[in-house]
Image 1 (cartoon, rainbow, N blue to C red):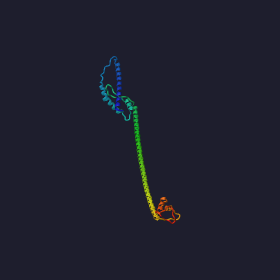
Image 2: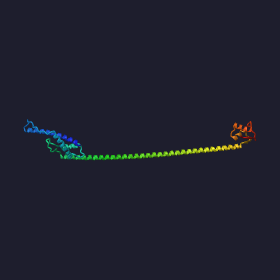
Image 3: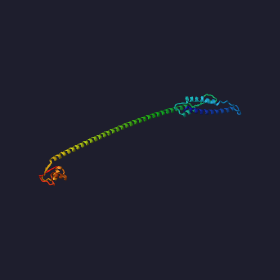
Image 4: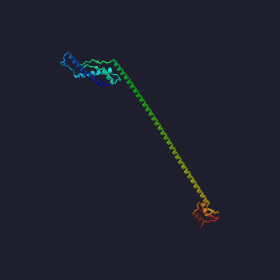
Length: 271
């Protein structure tokens, strides 16, 4: 309970005490008048204190004194507001309106008061133990949560590193495969070029051999003696590889022949 709240409670109690004192004073005044036989006489007017003095008295004396009494006698760490109000109502100090500052304690049962104090202390102790247990459980939960998050972060980091290593391995394999394919392509290109060069060389040699053979045959075939079962067509085919009419006409022209007929033993020029 704050000082302002306790001050409001003291002010409420003070006002109720003032009302009770007014009623008691009126009753006592009437009883004195009846005892003295002055029922028909009006009571003498008493001089009332100005309100300012009452206000100053409440502000500078009653309120600080009440707060001091509360902290000395009633305040206990861990005591709830309801317990403090209940205890303070049992031990409230009454102040006489006439200005008498003598404290008149309200009679209370000492044993009951001690029991309540013990219960309050026991409750405060249990509340403190409960609060400590809750704080300990909260700290342990926070530690467990922090450990869990750290473990999750560690696993995530390991998974990230494993994924990076996997990607690096895949990239290395892909690069090796690409290098292998490039090397195979280069080898295939070299083999193709070598094959083409070999074929070109073979073609060149074949062409050279053919030309040499033709030259040789041409040198040998400058003249031919007709053999049995030969005719002009077969002779042209054997020597020129061509038995066309143009080839036959060329042979006829070189030998002055008018037809393709030849005789065995006849010598024919082969241009």
